[in-house]
Amino acid sequence: MQFAEARIARARAYRMAFLSELRYPTTRIAKLLSGLFAIALFLFVSIAALSGFLLYQVLHTAHAGSSVDLNVMMGHPVAFSFPIANGGTRDGWFYPGLRGSPTIVVCHGFHSQRSDVLTLVTALQDQQFNVFLFDFAAHGTSPGVTTIGYREVAELQSAMNALATRDDVDPKHFGLWGVDMGGYVVLENAVSDPRVSAFIVDDAYADPRDMVQIEVKRSGLTVLPYVSKFCDLGFRMLNYQYRNQPAVTAQLIRTKGIPKLFFVSDDRPDLARGMTELFTRAPEPKQMIRDRTSYPDMSDDDRKNYESQVVSFFLLNLPATSRAPSN
Image (cartoon, rainbow, N blue to C red; front, side, top):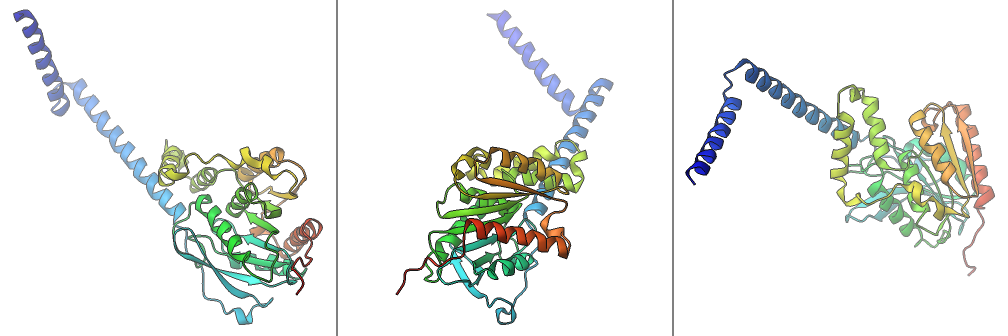
């Protein structure tokens, strides 16, 4: 009994001595290890803090929106607001086409806004389509913080629900166009909403986490260890409610029978690889077009050609004919 108590006392004394040595090192080795541990801890905390700041910058996009007088805009657009899930609203612009015809919803990309795609809207309206566009959260005139696609999917769904209540549109047929973030939003709605009759995606991605990594890589800070992992972890924690959301790639089979067009840009290789996989996994009918430059960076001539291809696709697969009941 006394022997056992002595062993316990010695073990306790060794433990206390070890902890004391860590706190107040006396030997050279202990001092070296303590210094290395302090440096490692400092680097860990510094990289974690830097990663958090970088993620904050990615998600808090600059608001570049400004007030616009719709009375002087071509196409005679009208303001159209709709409620969103969190109790707020989104302001959009509705460009009227042939009464009772389908509506094309144009979805801008990450770090962009609705005013950046007005020439495409005009090209579609010229062919008698109704066209609608709005700013996603944290873009243009819309407040909030972006989730780079997760919550934005519901925003587009809310827009379509509100548009379907109008008496001058076809409530059962919609066309969708979206670039990068807008493309992801389009894909998610296309796999779940039977009202989507045709859609186009340009440089889209299968998971918002992919876009976070692209933005982190673009910052140049991935030369530091664990920055990518910390940013991914932080983004997942902020969007914990979407932890079970599968990549849209796994759901593309649901778009079987829906005409779809994929644009792939050579100057965005990080997105081009994912787009190629999306196209491969997508069921028929489908087609893919490769461009040298992405839509936001196109010259005027290239943009006109691009918009002509978009209009031709929708004219072929979603004709702007009135489906409104006769009075």
